[in-house]
Length: 411
Image (cartoon, rainbow, N blue to C red; front, top):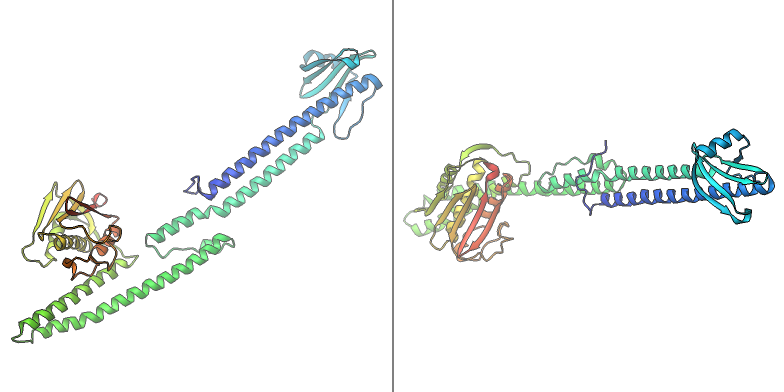
């Protein structure tokens, strides 16, 4: 069964093909009507000519392309004259101003004229050879056009599904089955083969990246843990302990963010979605900051319940809280929840990174406040939200940085 392509717009190939074939069918029909009128005119002229010839010679002039019969039956002659509809009536000066009448009766055309020898009635033979040839040619050309249209349509219609596959690929599904396209021997089959090779290369790159991050993170975690234990063996040198503790804490933070990045980069990761109170998730996110004297101010118009993966969503909230506090002038952030939108508002300068790049990985604001950051926080947050079908927006107004999340889809 031929499925309708979902993108029938004026820019699509199929739309243009439809227009081309519609014009072709319309032109063919117009030519058929015009040719039929010309043939009909010729047949009319032929009948009138036969009447004149019969009046002068008493016999019909034979023509292999058209037929005519001299009606000698007086009864039929009277029936045609009485019941036939007059198409036109004209006096012929060459025939002493006698009238020639063209009539239509029971689907046949008749030419009638009174002559010295009596009444003359010529019957045209219904379907003439030119009419039949024209009709056959019209049907044949229409059949060829219809066959070409169906053939082209069948060749192109998989593009709609193929486009949907590419959209799925863009959304992160790299396990797309392209076998039905690869079996084809046309351009679509060739494109599908190239696309499959590109997908396989991307899969290899992703697998290599995931393997690298996972193994590097595991390899780093062991010496960091041992280093923290070794710190306890240092005696009477608090300055060195603080220096090493900060180094190991920074390394551990980087490892944890690498683990999270590796987890959310897996395209087929399944979220553990459940219903949670948003306020509870924010409280848990606060506890992960490990900051004394937190200045987080809450404003909520309701106690919302949302369906999310708590483990990941808490990390996203924690990153936004940490980002707000880190870049604020007064080390505080206001969390405002209103009409299914949660906003993280903090006073401070506009970031030096453009809004288009603010969520890119490893891109850091040049401000001194971000000297210890890795440039992964907002990237991880964006990826987590996209996994949930949500998005994050940024705005700077009146000296305030604000990140918005519309969580209506998760309610």
